[in-house]
Length: 467
Image (cartoon, rainbow, N blue to C red; front, side, top):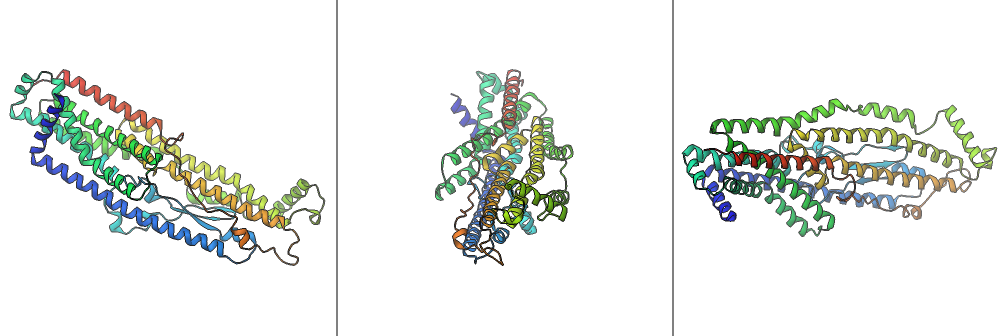
């Protein structure tokens, strides 16, 4: 019974040209946005792979040299692109995609696609997730008006209610039909395109499937929220124009203004130090080379650690040991200063997500980026992995210098390709979606709360619906 009612309601909605036109236009926009984002990410991924291969060849093919010098020239580490990134590029266009790994320094990620984009590219199509978050309420409210208010306006609403066995069943059919139409227009085009593209590239695995299922669930839940709220409002309000005006004001405030205001509020509540301040602190606390007094104290500490009274009695190369000590000292500084900066950014994200109580778009957007692998948490995981690789590489080079004390009298020890080959490729494995902390439970709770609220409002409205 309910299935036939849903089909009838969907048919009635699509008979209105403005409804069919709006849904078709939205579907085309979303599909174009996905195609645009997907093509750009494929080009970027191909470029990353090409340059990474060239970097590896350069590292293996370098001439014999001092290992510490090799650590200075080092390599670039590139961030991989996850299969669902085209659905929601998230912060990726605004953060670095590669890190130059060198001794003494934890460098900032380089190459921000948006910074290098032309004005035309910056004004290009938004991504599917952004379109869905913005357009879903508009389409849902439009369909709610078409399903309820227009019938009331034509005078047929009283007859519909009189002939309905249950107002709840009638409104449920309208809500399900509207949910199906909005989901078909905004969610399915990009999702199906992504699924086919991922299958074509052979990238489906358990983690990708879990991410895809989670992204789809969030998108469908978000559409359900706005549809239920739209139906609840128009079913209770007799004044058609007032209902439409109220819904569009709500859209402008809840779905447009509140997320932007929440972002600004998070920045004001948890301001970040400037890049210049961070770099100045790093230079002061972790210099590449010690000043005379500090170098003297460090050398005395080194002699004491090895239980000898003179440099000549050291069982390791003095220069290599000093370089190693300075490098390891910098690790703690980097963890405290740069790690603290990253933690502050993560806290900003958390502060922003807490405002999801005022807008479901905040929670849905956060979850969308998490499932697509394009949020700050995934970016931070890459930065941490690149830094871990850098430390292992530099420590290995410094250890090689220390182990060859006196091997090059009158000069410095020269390593060759046999050492370079011992350093493995940089391979970053992003966190799996089921790992702790990858998906914020607060965002999940916010979506669930909004869905429960929308359902309660819908049921309350259905019980009190009037002609």
